[in-house]
Length: 438
Image 1 (cartoon, rainbow, N blue to C red):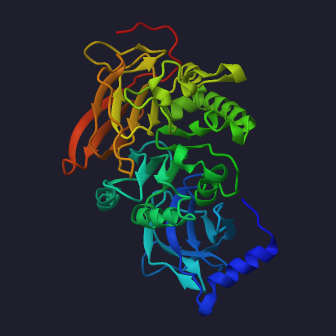
Image 2: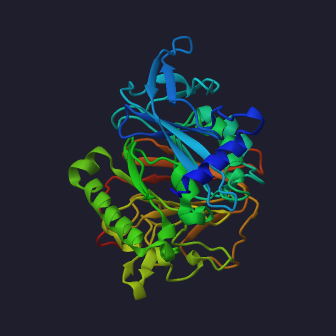
Image 3: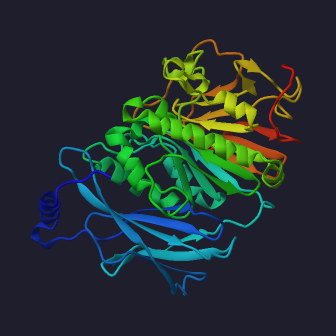
């Protein structure tokens, strides 16, 4: 967190309280999963400080009698005005898995509208419905109204980097506006994120302060994992590879954590319980766009590392631990890939490429809509590119069970039409080892 001298904070507070106006009404409300299915984290913002933050909740909209006290963080933006606000968090525990709850949040200085959420079902014998996208901005957020209208269709959201364009813009007021826009979704569904390149200002301070990892203590790191149904999902930062000036130690720390997390997730007893290992990071290893981004290079930094700094890439690790699915964004387009490792396609078979493939499956879903518009495709794609589309839209993923995951790409340009779909089928989940290619 960026710190300012006490006298400066007093001046900011007095300026915000000019004419006796206090801004203590909760806004920018969003949920995230906690440590286990019995917990949920509620986060909201106020411009001025408030009395003790509280969430009141219950299993009926007429019986919102339970309450949990939280904590507040004073966030000062890194812009020239050093604009300040307060971010409030409450960790609800002891929830009944699968139970729907009604809640509102705030303090004696002001309360939010009523919202609801469903606690994560316990165990692995259920089918999570997830909507995922990246690169959604405050301007040209074309997919947002459709996403808002479909909130009842999903159990969770994966936002794979790049928010608002940019959260720090105009003294972070653009970030505030974006969080208000996403509230009709994120106040009802756990909103799980990873950082993108557009969050980099002031050492990613807007991202680190606004979003909560699935545990209650604050942390400077930008990586975490969580379990949902029959899947283990890992969120990490590709940006450590590109903003080395913020410290290579964070990149090394993430790499070591990733290996520990993947090693544990791939243990036979854990893989038997949750077979699917899914990763999400912002900048992809592969793409066929024409913008000269990292993924257009044969030796992508995310894929192969930074040799001169003795920093490893992630493709070998993902292959060694049998990552099933790698989700990406950054490119303002949708691209589905054949199973690929080291620029070689390892389809399951000629007729059924996504049945028992010999390598991870990669998917880019970065076309939700932002001020930078689309990233065009190169005329010729690599042999690993299976399908490309430039419509604004987002991706639906249903993890049916331990063997089947289905995907649908929704086109907002075509009024919700499904422009691509496929099913990933795996009878075994294990390191890929010896394999043939198709």
